[in-house]
Length: 330
Image (cartoon, rainbow, N blue to C red; front, side, top):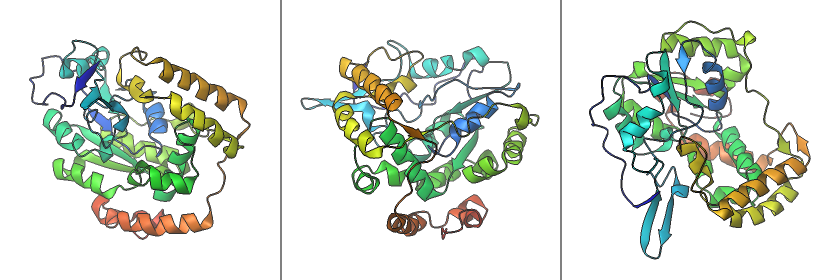
């Protein structure tokens, strides 16, 4: 369903007696272990999570979701995530209603951290919600996002060129401004920051901190399946980039599927064809566990640049993150 450019309904709508809204939200950042944390918490007997990201609070934000906007002649259009005839809050509650009264309810939408509107909207509707943010070494996160774009057919550029053409790679590793918006809206005790490196390095300790923060029993991670190391990379990046030149002309609005209750029903033929093409290419090209090494000059540049963009991060979150990201001066 498409609408002219507007905003989501205000969050002050009255909530009915049955609470079907999140107790906690994992708000970002992308490529920082949010999938792993979701996967682990979803196995907790006291926690319930929808299977996909919802983006209710920032779907109309052109910064975080440029793919949801288009133009027809001179008319701006927005791809509404809601099913036809559904009101915003009713649709949002419907994603959680099966879980109501059956433990803590969570949501994860990894773009909330970077949206200029999400923090205030979340506060207006869910003033007691607990926020969780996963952060990763900014340079490594940027590189991981680039390879995600490569492997999903969304860029055909080298890493260096992609940085200059796709601002989300740098913006996605700029944590301070987004976190400040949430600290301005919520008390410190309602915000938990988890480092990717600690989640992967000592998973049990990191998960214990999260479960304590949420007020649920500890979860023995050794007894669980996890998401670690399930990502593979192409060992023929030049071939992948060449194939992606074709995909760029086929794929349109691909991530709308994250916004609906079921499969994407409104996707055009080009979008469906592009998605199938990308999946085929990914299956055919040779794979390796590790991505190619970043150029040392690029890493040095990004370390300096992203240190400056994240100045004050340690003071903001109340811990010395440079003790983990030892080459970053933040």
